[in-house]
Length: 234
Image 1 (cartoon, one colour):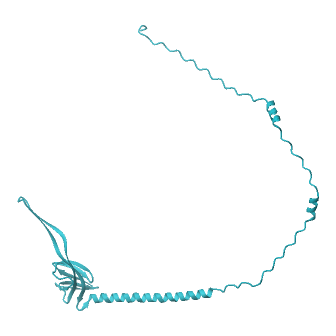
Image 2: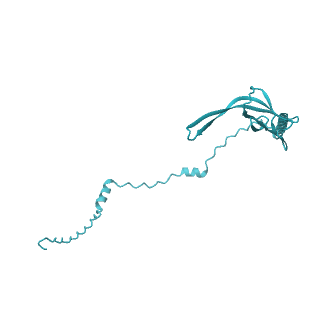
Image 3: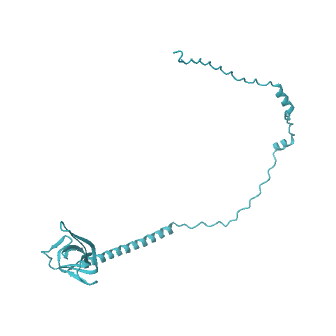
């Protein structure tokens, strides 16, 4: 529900709980006043339009604080008269908080409070339902975990049999025969040639013919310079 009120020569659209600045009303802080100049009241699709005011409608407001508006510069100028006037003005304002809108005994504040409580109860109901569902889910999960859990296998008490030492392997006949035969004498490696033999072989090999540099081409003879003409020749 909202309403259109008139105060200080201006019109304002107000709702329950909102704050607005109006021209100074000269009321102390914390006091509650009733605004009778209600031009329109709308509740959903229904609207009551006043001529000029709505009968049986009233708006209650609480005074929050007294303040002043922004400065407005007033400048007057008179041409050809050397007249200049500059003034500043700050309007005195009163801040109101709308507490209730009443139309034919129907209160907007009570309707808003009822809607808020209904919303709270609905939220609480949903929270309780969610908590109950969570408890059921936890119980079902515990049952499934207990059903799927199997007992651990018991450890066997039988002592392990002592391992018997393996009998030493008897040497085979082939290995005994091979051990009996003496190894054949291997031919000795040839002795490495001495330094004197290597030096003699180097001396006996003829040296490689040295490569001679190619002869350079003879420079071309320069052409004889022509004699320059002198004054005598002219």
